[in-house]
Image (tube, rainbow, N blue to C red; front, side, top):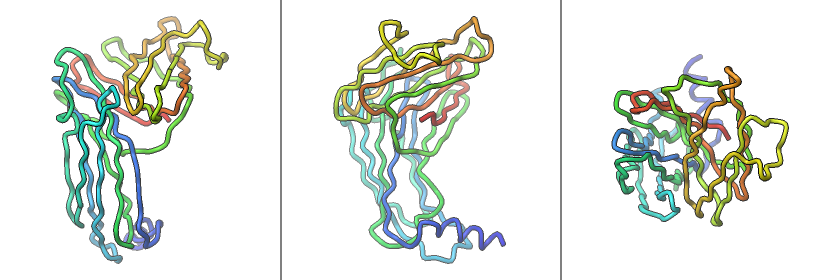
Length: 239
């Protein structure tokens, strides 16, 4: 039964050539780095033929400048790990951002498998990992549980457009979706650039804080929580 289930899941896409894309939110400073982990590992009881696939990775700094182009062929039963933040300039005082655009594709027909590229943040005493994901939004509403004061909440935003993205965000006004002069904050992100918003908590409401983000162009968001020295860190998709 287990063997049949494994083969069924890995064969859902059919025996085709494939192309899968995703975005890696890069954050880094002297205490935390961002790594890409891509595997071509198959269950031992997979009945279909294993195939190699190619990986393309374009790394951009926060200003949207392409810093590095990486292309690798990943053979069956192998994997690779790349420290993406090593290619970006380090600001020892501040947490910086960047982004990596990932494309995984095959030259041969075959099963694409049930695995996905993953990234992980490596901090001083912990790691946080998540699979890459494509897609974008132009607005975002978040209702987030408040956390302890020693933790910081970040919203990572990657500009998915080749035009400048003007972003406004507000706090604790879930009924007003039209951001005007009462916006809590705003930022401008260059084409293919990225930035981090530090999300303050509303101390009046003890349980949750509401945020609404509106942009002029499409963006890809990720939600990050970290302790002051990044000895604890977590990350998740939010759009």
